[in-house]
Length: 351
Image (cartoon, rainbow, N blue to C red; front, side, top):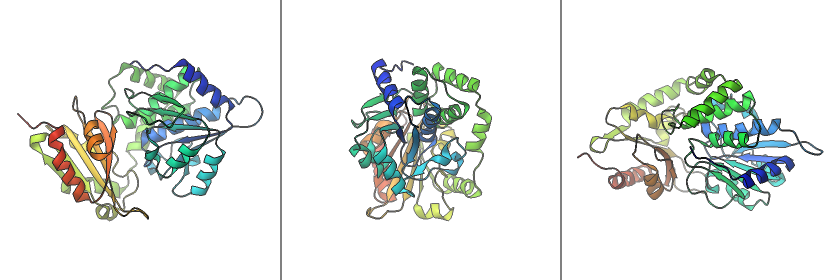
């Protein structure tokens, strides 16, 4: 895979890191495994770097809102500051920062209320991402859509600077690689990826324990919600090889929904023979100042069947060919109507 960093950008980024005393790492809303893996991989690496000159280096990770419980075991997760519950502390860290490193998002809109503060900040900004078409908000951009995850790019960046990861950092990077490829079931055909995994294993990670910590720690409510979603809420459009799952806020409340409880749900219909496209819609209740509910939409597909263009053009989103996301402010019914109106344009019917 031809991922090549510009040496001038790497040198400048490394100089900024060496000189910085207050580094803030930021990742996107509703942090998933790759957001957590890339951000905490950086955090563990930066905490272990020697500091040039006098003084200490403070490194902090900020996330806009809560992350799932099954990522709370990750090394450094206990040090993360959540804007939703500690806005004053986040604002203080942003004000005092002399370097920002942004991971796994391509637009400040994806970090919610932190976005405007980040754009307004005068400290230099480094972006490490794998989504298409990053907006022009960072001073140095390491963006490679061909990478399987932001965690992969973080790993490559660390290695190209001449440093190695600790076991803790390697554990975080592997978590990002594993989760953003559906446990290596999509976006994972590059030989380079498995060479990285081999290096992480040599660094001392325990990959089976990582898998268990992420995928085998579900609550009873989560398992019941999954069963309900698949049995009661899954629709199949057989002539288009397409599946749709929708869950309202009331339905989520019925099963005591917690952040991350439906992560991976969109992948499950792809286990059905002759289903090549899967879409999942989740309703979020309106927040103060937002009169309409937000519908979060996940897209998945198999093989040479893109969903990112559909997500981008219809649902204000984007992502990878086989794994994308979008959103709509309105009712769940409106989202479903737009879905049904638009998919014939992006998916060919049988024969």
